[in-house]
Amino acid sequence: MENRDSRRWTGWIKAFSLAALGVAGTLFGFVALLDPYGVRVEAGESPRPLMDLNQRFMYPQLVRSGAFDSAIIGTSTIRLLDPAILSQGLQARFVNLGMNAATPWEQVQIAALFARKTAAPKLVIWGIDLPWCEADATSGARKLTPRPFPPWLYDDSGWNDWAKQLNFTTLEIAVRLAGNRFGLVPPRIRGDGYEVFTPPEASYDLDRARFHLYRGSQGKAPEIAPLTPAEVVTPEQRATWRFPALAWLDQALAAFPSQTRRILVLPPIHGGALPREGTAAHQRELACKAQIGAIAARHGAVVADYAHVSSLTREDANYWDPAHYRLPIARRIEADLIALGKGEPAPDDPALRVSAPIR
Image (cartoon, rainbow, N blue to C red; front, side):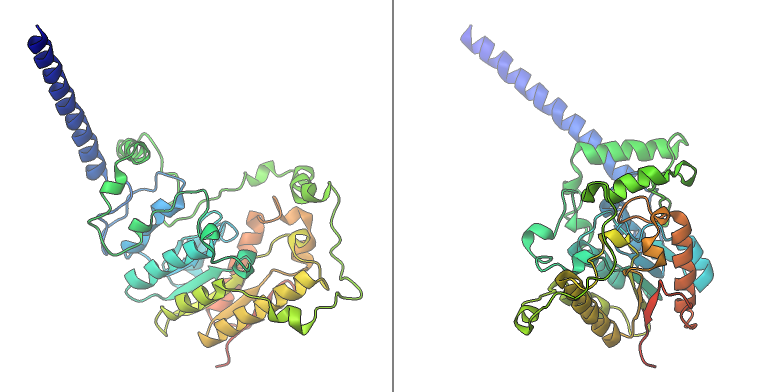
């Protein structure tokens, strides 16, 4: 009796294991067939429709496709720049590779991939946010965010990519992609990486925007007038200021061919989120900007600086929250960048400070 029960139990285990392997194999085959992350995409091939909002997983295939010769890199503060508008204005093929809350390290990964996989990079527009100036920007704790990041999609080896996709998230995206193939589900992000992630302009509410702008200061507008007299910062204090992530920026810019044009954009965040002029924090920010300018000069890059108090950054109605401007501001920045990308004189606008390389 015991032997019979044992054989039955053993047979059940074998049957269950075979069924489980069959199901796993079928699901893996389904994922491999759909290839939702575009692992098989190479130069000259079309990337898959972008069916997930985690740009970190979706964008590498856009780069490897070779469909774009120019790129926008940065965080959400640069994502509203429309690559189609820039492409038309600069006779280029732009892709927006900005990623929500991307750390400097993450930005460098996508920039390095673009530099390696693009035959002749024409123009790179790189949004440089305040996190680039943080003293601990290169620490292990600051390299990544809670959002998953797949380094295996950014290397040059394909053999290790498939095993990483054995999970329910990839399966879900593959199902969405199948739905898209049948015309049932639209892409989550446009095929050039562009997405209007802010609410519809028609729904803009200035009072609600001010709630978001000033909730960190108990609902009151912070003081943005210069501090007089300015705080005293000793040479010893200045000597301790470090901006380690800027070394990554220097190396990343050096990876592009000499003929690649480079524009570094310091996006316009709300004036209340900027260090108050005259404070030690503001003086530290200026020191960081000086280093960014020196790096730009070494690589023949233009710096377009909107990150200072001006009519653009003082006006509450230009913003949804401290970091995110509205679509009309994005159109204004695009026009400026088109002019700068053509080598035309900088627009006569106090909100824009331009530092161009000596030619």
